[in-house]
Amino acid sequence: MPIHKPTLNIEAARQVNLVGLCQVEGIELKQVGELWVGLCPWHSEDTPSFTVYQDNHYHCFGCEKHGSSIDFLMEIRQISFREAVQALSTELGIQSHSYTQKRVLTPNLPTKRVVDRDLVEMWYQQLLKLPERLDYWYGRLFTRETIERERLGWNGEGYFSIPVGDVIPQCSDVLSVRFRAGDGQEPRYKGISGFNESALYNRHCISGNKTICFFFGELDALLCSDDGMPSVSPTNGKESFDPSWVDYFTGVERVIIIPDRDDPKKLIPKRKVNLQNLNVKEKYQHGVVTEYESALSVCEFFGRRAEIKVWDSRFVGKDYSEARENGMTAIEFSEWVGIE
Image 1 (spheres, rainbow, N blue to C red):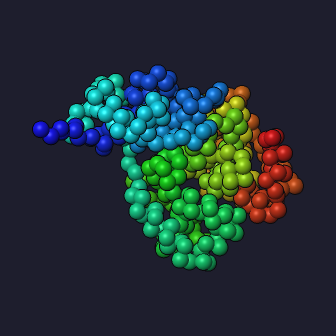
Image 2 (spheres, rainbow, N blue to C red):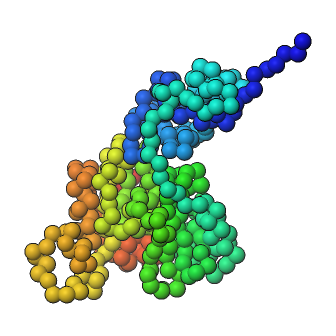
């Protein structure tokens, strides 16, 4: 009589919620915004670098282990693929051909709208076909490796595209896309209708680092990170900081806020108004808030961990990107802000 082996429901096993699975395996996680973070079970560390994402995969920024629920169980118990799937199907309540899970494995995680990754890929491929547009990124000191990793692109309608990933580029959902004018047209910046909520660009670099640079431009944050100094930026301008983002900075000891250099021409109100009687929020409405005031408003949320650096006169340019293009080296910047 033939022996019928049980069918492995691999896809259902992959869908077992990793947060609950970590709890079952004794790993303590703390919710930080849309992420869950904790100490990595595979290497010794003091700052949490093990992260579980909304799309149900994990990644450790310390030892670089990553994968699905199946990969996690294989690693944590040192068992085979088949044994992991069977364990997820039996011990943890997965029924054959069903996605039903035990209560402990289904924490309530918020849903979000995401940009079709095929669009991002199409714009990236369009960029690769246009050497003159690629030269723009090279001129901004970005390497081919960065362009490929971040999927920087060209939308064919006069704008460069900058995808904003939920966390790690190409490994997480694309929350929005920032468009930057390629030929000096207006508006200089825009987004995709319906996908333009403010996000913290490049925030995956926060995990495992004690010092973070905070800019008010995505490309400044990206270039500075490429230069070896983890950096982030709000995606919708200096006034779009969300206080809930402070949770992402768990374990960070220094937040160095570097506002752009002020342009006096931009601080002239559109109509006559007494600036001394306005608070920062009201100044935003009149378009006359200084970059330093913006930095101060962000600084308040981080308390003693935060410090503001106003651009030294020896550096030419209004921001990190321009200063680098005008001869400032990454070493000079790191020494100036005090990053070893």
